[in-house]
Length: 281
Image 1 (cartoon, rainbow, N blue to C red):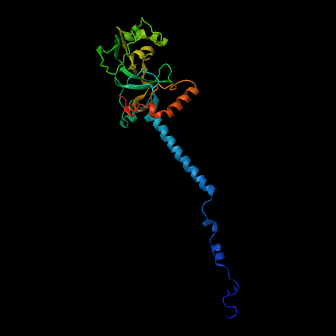
Image 2: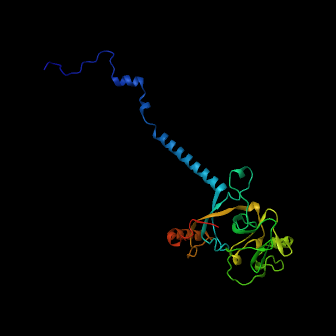
Image 3: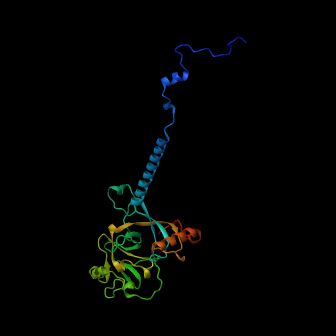
């Protein structure tokens, strides 16, 4: 072999490696991926934006469209039971005006079930059935409801035969006070009675529970102002049997925790499947 064969020729003056030529033209940092911290920051921003969008939508829905409520008492049996969880339509009875041409508003009618802020303690929510509208004359004779002198057909009304109560069953009876009547209402009652009938004032409703013998309603605390109406029950999205040993709706924090644990561990056994997703009428 010829001496020196296979050897790299000696570099001539001014020669530079090709990589050095590339470095002179392009900064290698431009070819690297974005730093990890920057990627994490972008991920956090996307998560925050998604969460904010979800919260805004949820607040809009709860404020203007629907809201969830739970039935805590037996006053609306058998239409609504203790342990029914409702979605309440807040649109149907909304105030008309600019939105009236867009949203399906309508006036409250006799026979409608409404959810409203309890006039005595507005932080509490009640659900009852509207029996009389502004200007109507209403009375009960032996538990039978008459509006404007005519008997009302009430196939939904429930009577448990708890004996006769003069105030409850022959309302209005301003001479027979009930133990659970609100003092303010008792003082006002005589002023809204004409010829033995209760006259409903403007912008107010007279409401009763479907379980007539066990309902704290307009007979005991007065009228529901129009502004107190929240909406109407739309759907029972879940119903759970509340007769379990720790199925309490109110009480201490420990009681509520026990109820939650019990409900989660007995969800299939205690769910009233025949009432789930039932439309409220």
